[in-house]
Image (cartoon, rainbow, N blue to C red):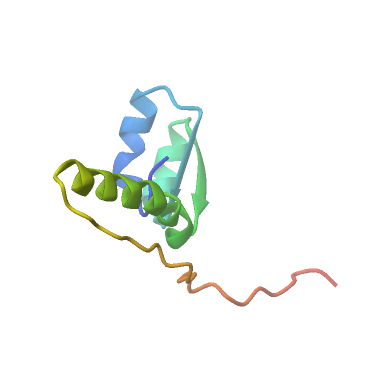
Amino acid sequence: VSGGSGDSLLGAARQAGADVFLTADLRHHPATDHLADGRPYLLCGTHWATEWVGLAPLAARLEAGAARRGRTLTTRVSQVVTDPWTLRLSTGS
């Protein structure tokens, strides 16, 4: 799993023996070239969706790190979806 654009990690995913690689914003040619050589299969989510899931754990780590240093840090993870893909049209009849 790679948040955001992960086509620079395609080789590492293959070397790790992954069956599937989940990332976002894959470019056509790097993805096509990668698949020509086999696995891992590619799942491409939206950029926001693949990064947003990591924000709450990151916020918790930041707060815990501050607490270990005797500081108080309050974080808020935005609930605003920033994916540009807001319109979906049916391709069926």
